[in-house]
Image (tube, rainbow, N blue to C red):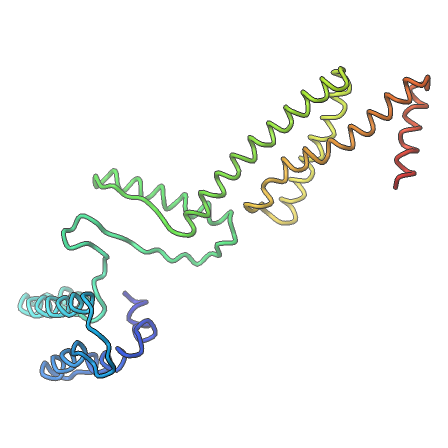
Length: 260
């Protein structure tokens, strides 16, 4: 209500602003109804009165009647509420049959700060569910931030599953390809440590991942295993040529340095 009262002319179409000025500056009932009549007459510009305009006209008349009834009740708070409802509309968006209502929340946080968005939406959703059970109504959330929260939660879940599946497939490929549990362990341990280091560095420097970068774990698993495959393949090749273990390791790192 406070927002509407401060920004009513900014939110109003240009062709209505002159009428609103006359309505809000009326000094008596005659001026008020004259301005109201002019506002809802067919203008010369060719604008056609819509069904929504007629409903708005009916609402103003009804709210004016409520305002007069409030004056008769001698209740100052009721008079002020009815006056605000007449000038700016109803405080709460509720259907005529009273079965449906809507509350608009305008957060001050940026939709790009996904960590705060998830926390905010979860807290609001918890409050809404608690109140809906208390008053025995059906309630839910919707909007851009809710969609962003849902996308982030689903992405985190799916990427976790994708990372785990990637690791399992890597283990299976190593067992089938090298037929050695020892080589599989030696390749997977540094891979897992590398992913942990990457996530930790991201947390320290950036703070959180977004919907795109959250797939980093699965990508690193696929890219990082290539180095282990090259190293172990070359090591096995050198061993098969009769090199000792130390000589084979030395040959592997010499080959790496040459490629660098």
